[in-house]
Image 1 (cartoon, rainbow, N blue to C red):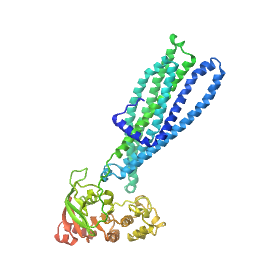
Image 2: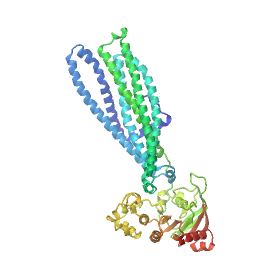
Image 3: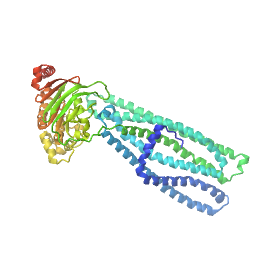
Image 4: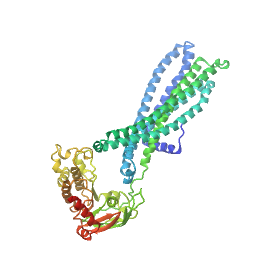
Length: 585
């Protein structure tokens, strides 16, 4: 083949080949089928010479009768070989796509939070869906065409040289020219394919954004704006496709023109006095038909560059995801039962994408069974502490410990089993209420346990009015429920999980005053016998906390109980007075 690959392309191709290893038996059957098909398909031309020279020129009916039987046998063999090769390669291609797609999805589950904050969700979806399909073509269609058509070319060249090596030399001369054309087209296909991957990612991104934000689109009447943005992305994708189609449409006639010049040269050479008498009619016809038959496999080999380059670009894109480092989880130590305290000592932290410290010299101790509240303006570092406690991000030094064990010495799975999280942004799934409550519980749960969690969290109050009760579907992200109902399901989930440490991250900030009061009563039930970290803007929700840390620009500027902080008449006092005044107004 006339393909020229860069080092990175070769590495991608070799890595892709490793996925064939589990399917050696099917691969061998496919190769045997391809070899049989190629030999039989091209070999038919070999019998033209005896049919003309012996059967027709010498009027030998026996030769023609044998030829009639051979035609039937050849097409039976050709059909069986075609079925075996196509079926086996389709099976291998689908299995490889399945494996890579599964690996990519599974790998995404273990990537750090920082990765998803830097990468667009729509483009990641496109990698797993669209890119994986391109790999399927690269592993089945490309493999079939490359082996089958290359073998056909070799068999046809052998027939041509056997029939008349003098006439065949002309076609061999133009071979390198065809190779140069295919090499140029290959590079062009690669460039366009990369642009198509990016364009398809943009189409998926705009689609995902418009669907997930449909409520806001309706509220702000921005349907035309979103449609315009999607049309632009869709049109860029269309233009890239047309560039691909144009390159393919130009390359095919170009190769056929070069081949036709070779055939014309053969006819001209055969007309010369010294040549025309040296070959029989059968040999001349066989050579000419073989040359004409070369056009189809050459065209196929040129066209397959399109799928090959798209497949390689797609594989490179998916392998890029697979090569992303997962969360560090080399520690083996585990907590059997949280029994003492959480200590934070001299904690300094900055996010990987920013060198500016968001936490500066933070210190506190949270004793088991107590509640600590983190308050302050937005951006003061409250949620960053919660992120570090659950090791969504890693502090530079072992500055946080649970039961005197540094966080980085604990198994990641064991560490997160110690926490239940109820946040402002409740994430629910398009499933039943019961399934959403049971989500994240690391043990088998009974219907009775789910019902008990629903009753304690007051989910039962609205669920029993639904036709299917707890088995009612709630729509995408709980779209059929109110904000308070969604929050109650999140609380029920935390109750059922029954982790010893509870993090309430602005759990009621999105609710109105009445709903907040009702949810606070539910949260009070949840906090019983739990060690709780409350992150809040509304100070009315944290009056009873054992400790309150007032955060300001990443530092703890004040620390104490609600009463102690009011007596200080510092930052907490002014924050409380301002909120009290706003509520009174």
